[in-house]
Length: 343
View 1 (tube, rainbow, N blue to C red):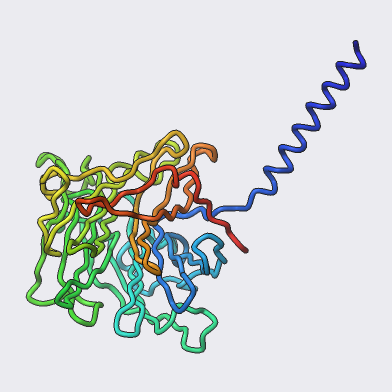
View 2 (cartoon, rainbow, N blue to C red):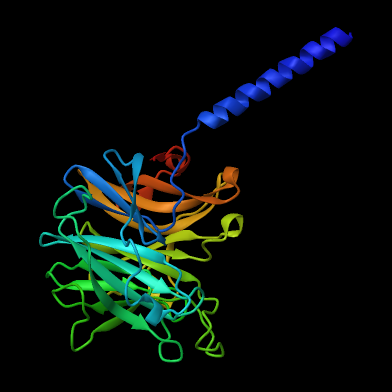
């Protein structure tokens, strides 16, 4: 009997060792926040929140080579905006226009609207090219506590059907804004033209320096089907298993809005249709971008995985459209896509 028990224990030990070996062989995924993607030639480049703006390259949107950081040091103006800046740059956005790439980014004091958005410009995204050189253009827009009831982070730039560039941005406070840019894509057009494109309820009794409970951020405007689709994230990010992020959507025939959800409610008055939320495998997800690559539309975002204690993972899902021209995501794909980090 003792012999059989020992054999059983050895068998169990063998299973545990085999399972451990399989776990060790699992490729490492990309652990990132706020992913955006640009394409240069046949190569994709992904930029994310991180030290100096962390970036990666890929030929298939699955296997990603860690390329390093955009800023070897810090933007020269960062400490003047946020005295606590530690090199961690937030929420990039990448745009190709007239032969150049514009990389927008945010510097902020966490939980405050002591923030600014800057932009750096390059002729190529290929770090091996002789022409590769990021040239920082400085601050595009800045928010100041006790002056502004909006937060200058989470920028996204879209060129409208008339060729006019617009920057959407914002997090908490008085909601998400849209402002007209000059043709240089690096400065605010004069006379200034501003719009509120999404809000959630915020009491007038809350101090202006407090972010408040109106949890929404990360706008991204995507042109398709004769509409401008406004994607944004509701609720809380960056809290691992306690995150409650989800992706909401509305659309408009005009870039300036109003952006209406499926029920016809204006997103600037609390509207928004749920597009994608977490499930039993992911606590939450959000801060998305959207693209058309080689005739297919994609939704790109990060998700907090249950099996990895709420660690953030890159997700890229194909986006289809229903008969009413609203985006449709196959949620089963959420659990199938797994990025592979190549160091």
